[in-house]
Every structure is written in C-alpha cells, then in structure tokens.
Amino acid sequence: MLSKTDNELVTHVSPGTGMGEAMRRFWIPALLVEEVPTPDSPPVRVRLLGEDLVAFRNTEGQVGLLAANCPHRGASLFFGRNEESGIRCVYHGWKFDTTGQCVDMPSEPAESNFKSKIKATAYPCEERAGIVWTYMGPKEKQPPLVDLVWTRLPEGHVWVSKTFEDCNWLQAMEGGIDTSHSSFLHSRSHHHEPGEHDFRARTRNPRLEVLDTPYCFTYAGIRPLPGEGKSYLRVYQFVMPFHQMRSEASRHEHASLDGHVWVPIDDEHTFVYNWKARRDGGPIPREEWERAEHQMGRGPEDLLPGHRLKQNRSNDYLLDRELQKSGVNYSGIPGTNTQDYAVQESMGPIYDRTKEHLGTSDLAIISARRMLLQSAHDVLAGRDPVGPFADASRARPAEKVLPDTESWQEAMQHELLATW
Image (tube, rainbow, N blue to C red; front, side, top):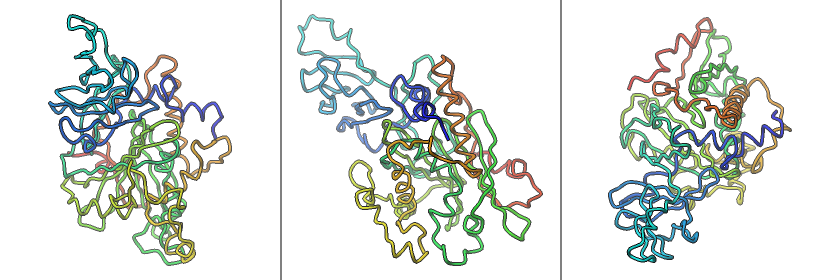
C-alpha cells in the first residue's frame, strides 16, 4: 500500500509535480510518425504530461512540437496553416518555426523587429522506430536519445501501435508488469487440462526475483513445473520511466520481443505504445503484425478515432457471460489487450492505493514504485532521477526452462544481452 501523499506524488504528472518533472528528464513518445506523415501535412493536437501541444511536419520534413496556444492572443495553433517551413496562426498571421521562433509577424509594421523577441514554447523532436520522441525537460539536462534494442530496428522490422486508456498511467503500467495476472485474466482454458507448453496455466503462483540495474531493474517470473525438477522463467526488462520489454514464444518460426510504453496524457488518461519485433531482428510481414494486433483487440478494425477501443466501458468491453461461464475464456472479454483495459479502467481514474493489500507476486510493482518515488523525490530536491543517462542499449528480455539447480542470472546471461 502507498500513503495518500506518495500515491499523489507518483501519479500526478503536470508541470511542477515530482513525477512530472522526473518524466520530463527522459525522451518520451509524443505521437506516431504516421500521424504527421508528410511535409506540410495538417497539424495534430497532442496532450502530453498535462500540457496541450500541437505537432506539425514542416516543408523540410522536420517535426515541431509547440505549445498549443499562440503567444500573441492565445488562439490554438491546431487551426494554423502549415506552410513554407512553419506554422502560421490564422488569427493574425504570426508564424513560428519548429524551434518556436516567430519568423513572420505581418500584423505589425514592416520595420518592426518585434518578431525576433517572440518565441513559443517548443520541445525538440527526433524520429525513431515509427515514433516521434520529444524531450520536455531543462536543456542542460537533456540525455541521449532513447536507445533500446527495438528502437534500433529499421522500418518493417519493428511495428508500433498506439491505444488510448481511460485511467492514470501508473495503474496501466502496473498491470503490464504484473506477471501473475496472465494465469487468470488471460487464461483460455479454466476448466480444461492446459497444454504441456502453457507454463503460465500450469503454475499460477510464480515466484518473483528482481535485480536492480542502472536503468531500473530486471525481473524474473519463476514458475516451477511440478514433478520435473525444472522451472519456466520469463525474464522482463523495466527501463525508466515507463518501458517494459518481454519475450514471447511464437506460433510462427521466430520468437518475438514485444512490450509497451505507458505515456501519461495527463493525470487521468494514458496513451499506450505497443511494439513488436523478432528476436533475431528480422523483418515482420505487415499481415502477421496486423493479425497479432487483432487477436489482442487493438487492430485497425478494433479502434475508434483517437486510438480508442471499440470495446470500452460504455459497452462493458463486450463481456460475454456465457463465454466466461464456459471456461474457454476466463474473463469472458474478447482480446487480451481489452481484458487488461477492462480491469485497469474499472479501478477508476486514479486508484486509491491506501486501500490495497500487496502480496509476494507484486514484487515488480513494489520495485517500480520504489524507483519512481525515489526519482520524484530526487528531482524535487534538485538531484537527477534514476536512469536517463544509464545505458540500456543491450538489455533484452528472455524466457527459458531451466533446471532448478541453475541460477537464471548465469544461465540466461547471453539471452538477456542484445547482439544487434
């Protein structure tokens, strides 16, 4: 459980809050590259860490991210004209480049130098792995651009989607790093004998071990296989402030890596970036990616405008009580991703963690909170948070069946290091 003070500290992300200022020390996803597809394409509304912004791609192809309101009289730049290397406010014609500098002020006398004194709030942007990343913190504290195993892959070798979740970022993230819930919420054979390879169905009470790292921690879900003297281990990477990487056995020829990035829109809403790559870094056909996304409940045909799920709170996520009763689908809700959203959003906009009771299977959640709270306190005290300058470039997840006599840290050393 958390105290009320700590719960507010770790969940609130607006400017000036401890968690908000800590997150601003990292490169964070602002939007998908496909949302600003071509030079001079229409501007896009972005809300990030409680700030209203506007993104646009200029004539040269560079992405700008500016405060939504024009610094002249406050009109929204979303309605602006994206033209000739800048965005022009339609109210009085003031024009800004991607750095926020006012470059034209036609409503003022031609001899005026007023435009040189006006600069809109702007954040630097870089593109990588289909995502436009931005840095919103102090310029002198800017870390290197995010460099994770999946962000180095070229187009067609990594796929990324984005979904809206109607709750605070922390309960979304904590659901993602909770390894024990998959044996229940996502179970599809409650009343049936599980298959011999469905390790998470065979052992429903994993033992967790956490290993602190400079970038945050590595954690293992250890599931003993009864009578075999072996255990199934699924080892995850958690990278500050909101990245998870996990390994997934595949029905196809190649095993995959996948994970999530939980990005706060504001205190009560989240965008979840979902990515998938092959373990060997090879290409993934679009059809295979889209089929996997649909099975999760977040394929293109499963979404409403604004990256919102068609299965949502308003229709009880299409809960089917007969399907639930049959045991074929433990929750009765179609789609793994949708199952997660249903339980996480059911907790309310921001869950009151003074009321919870954590167990041993919640060790990863406890560890994440410890790191996040430490970072929030550090930033408020004038220190750096955990992780922005730590090297996580070789960290990757893995899964393996090991004899109980072997240490996973030693036996999986190679699997947990990226080779490309």
